[in-house]
Amino acid sequence: MIGSSLSCQRHGISDKDSVLADFDNKQVEHYGQKAYFFIKDGRYQVTISYDDNTDTYPIKYTFGHFSLQQYLVATEQGKLQVLPFAWDSRNKAEGGQRWYHNYSHELINNLFTHPYTKVEFITQDLNVHRNTASKYLNQLVEIGLLSKHKLGKDNYYLSSEFYELLSN
Image (tube, rainbow, N blue to C red; front, side, top):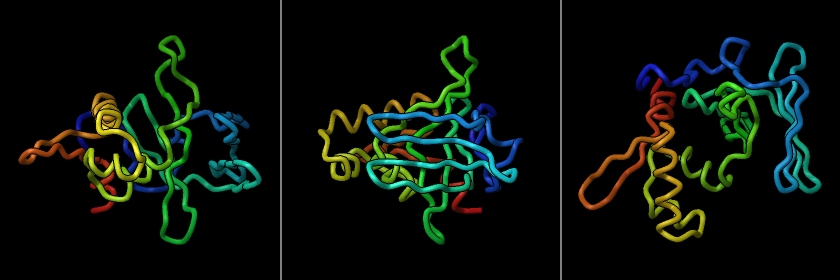
């Protein structure tokens, strides 16, 4: 774990000690994509709806920086997916204690396919300009989700928490 302010849950099972978000039958929506967060039989769960597709998943893992907690669900055997919504765990007076929509699923998938990425990977996967990709990655560095490393002429963006999760 990097620094004392990170709250990555490396042991997998999300429970009342690791989940910071409000799962008390909360519904959020962003451009037609809906999420319903709830607890059933003592397990944290989410129902995601988009267009005519609706799926319900138990929350498997929590991870992230202090102010940003994200959730992973198992969509298939051996395949984890980051939810499109994250929890802002800051106190309410600072604008926190709320659900909000993440970056595009393409960016999230890129970040969690490998424990590192670089601007070129983002430009290819998201079909965005280099400046936009760099801005996304540097914002994630600022909040502590990624760290930036220069190697030769390229910058690599490392998700140390994800790397640790994969190596344990």
